[in-house]
Length: 503
Image 1 (cartoon, helix red, strand yellow):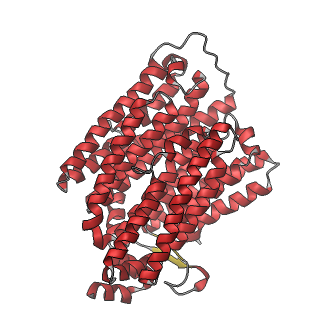
Image 2 (cartoon, rainbow, N blue to C red; image 1 turned 135 degrees about the vertical axis):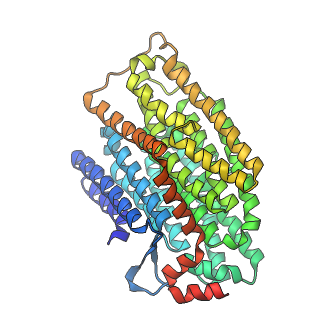
Image 3 (cartoon, one colour; image 1 turned 135 degrees about the horizontal axis):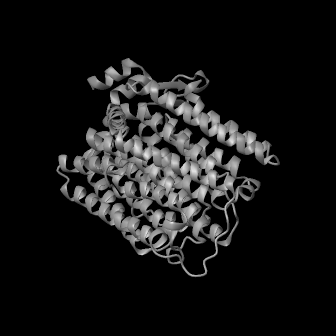
């Protein structure tokens, strides 16, 4: 039962909140409770898999690899746990300003439908069902993106859907070609037969198609334009959950597929991923440096930070993959928190444009302190979580003698600090503009907004100050990603794994 809980909980929550559409209070109670339950299930799975164990379930009792497999290893459990934490934080934040308007428009069922797709992707044991979960996420995310039905949202939503539909179409074509080439879609079975496939050239071409499909979802260079064009139009709870999870599902798919199915072809894909990682880091950080709207700055920094995560699969070493896992966890927490802070800045100052902000250091000192934690963590300053994540990525680059990639990561960290200091100087430090009008907060709104921001800031500080257990989990997850034989044995049985080793 535990293995199906991560997607059963949000599915039931989506159904319940849809049936209770006219009862907003009940919707919100169910929403927060379901998010807390999702977090609890993720932590329970992480505890079960912390020693490297892999949990497997075949839906309907069909023998694998022919049935639908649900597979949870430590990496999956970590992603489910962090997704549950983000769901809980955003569910609480969504009780703040604009809650009534969002909930009447269908926020609650769409939000939990999105979490259903996200957690399903993390549990997928075959590549076709990974495609299905991508489609679930696309449908729910489009509904959330255009929730307020403004002209700006519709324009951003169309761009978002068009590129994602192209990506998922390429994904489906690649799945068909992969089945035609290897005769199976189960991840473990693909890992078993891929190294001995006769036409390795065609298999590499299929890998490139999957890279395009996953890269579009992850917003890597040059497939990132949809993200800054769409995310800044969404309401802040929606933008926060998008920033936290949607691109990370693409990163998860890249890490899973290119370590498991195409791990034998790392000599070909490694340099490709290295070039993509460097270009993604540079273009994202330069885009952020150009803008003076908080939402656009943060959107471009999603792009730049994805590059750090791709370094892991570019180098394909245990240290690099562990750094990627640790960086994913850090970035999900920090980036979601920065979007939540952006919503608070908008409410405290009346605008997202930095030129119209100012004086928040005096007007909102608590918010000022809460901004510093995720902002400086994103820039990689010690002793925050971002410092350890960046240090691990850069160190793995030097150890693998990828000096240019490591130097690029270091330089992008400096430019990230510039963007965060720019927000600090413009929104918090300079004097408030003359004649600025700000709507007063109610006590309920302030508690709903500040509670998740403080909660995520505490998580960032905890990872930074007490990094050893998180780093140890990341190393165990990385070793699990690289241990193809253990994955095959867990899903298909030890006999086939031994046959694979002998081959």
